[in-house]
Amino acid sequence: MTILVTAASGQLGRLVVDALLARGAAPADIVATARDTSKLEHLAARGIRTAELDYARPETIAPALDGVDTVLLVSASEPGNRVALHRNVIDAAKAAGVSKLVYTSAPQATTADFVLAPDHKATEEAIAASGIPAVIVRNNWYTENYAADVARAASTGVIAASVADGRVASATRVDFAEGAAVVLLEDGHLGEVYEFGGDVAWSYDELAAAAAEVVGRDVTYTPLTTDEHVAALESFGLDAGTAGFVAGIDTGIRGGVLAETDGTLSRLIGRPTTPLIDGLRSVAEASAVASV
Image (cartoon, rainbow, N blue to C red; front, side, top):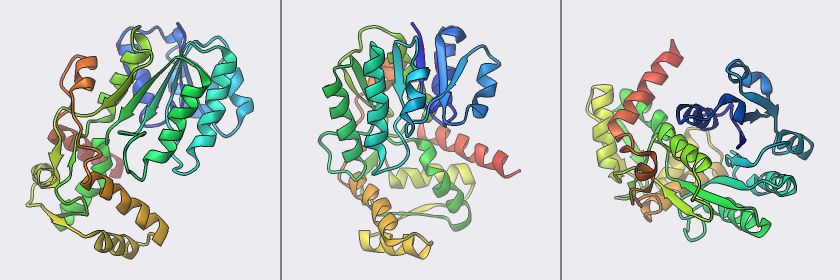
């Protein structure tokens, strides 16, 4: 079995490659791809085949898929423009006769009233229409998404958001990468739609308490209305559209879109997901190293 990982130079993709190797995949059976292959040189040095694959340039996709039977399609990072990019990969995978396609989707993508859902819903529908045997892994929030909040709390003592009492079942990218590696390597997952999330759904009061422990000072959660949140984001320099989009994520959290936690991810990876406090410590340590 040859497994191709898209966006392998990215924050999630590179961890999936690490997880595949840790779970026994041979380097020669992995194809790591990226738009810029110079960012994959460390993987090539480990015996992993590397290839250019740019979602926006279909002419790069077919050659990368040569001899590949399993593909991880890591969702593109351009909200509103994802679907066309994903379809390029889906079409090429179908033409190549790929026997398993794993896609990293969003929580409750086909049913949630969530600003991030439409692109993922359309992609899931395109995968189904293609007929490629597939596994959908709907990743909940990455704990790493709170890096800026923790850094800001270190100086302000405040985490402000418009989530009200919404809860988030976050996990770390390492957790989600391991989940992807499991479904890529194992038989028996085809046709499944997995809601991947952390074992604990925490509140923003609990986020503030965890951040306080990490940064070594009191931190409180300040609830905002959506209008207050948008105004604050615009004061930081975001345009109105972007501010509304970001606040819309909090609206989804307030509505419970990230609160689901059924233990699927920890069951598949064979261990508990990383606790919030440990994930935030790693975030803070990484930020400290990056600032040196």
